[in-house]
Image (cartoon, rainbow, N blue to C red; front, side, top):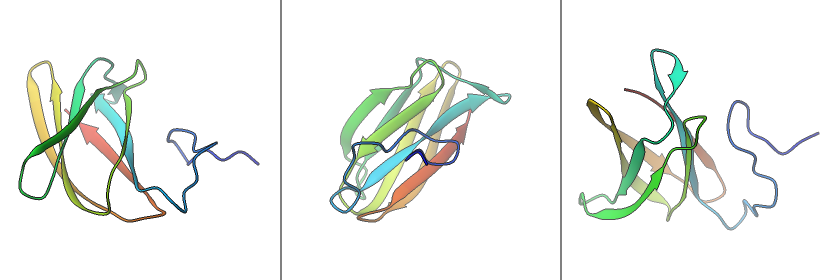
Length: 97
């Protein structure tokens, strides 16, 4: 049995008892969007981190538990999604631009 989440990034080597993970995929018309940027904003809207999506449209953040906003920046689109993250859990987010 592998440690990958269904449809998501592998969690192999990650001690989920100590981590809060926000991850997902950015798509457009059902196809992955590589090279988009996903920003992590705290509950007050302050910028915390930014990562580019992989060639398969995937991204991952390790964050503190709480409420976060993911701001996805892709050519021709900006999409905000709110996510609640909990210690020991993976918050899986699908973003369509």
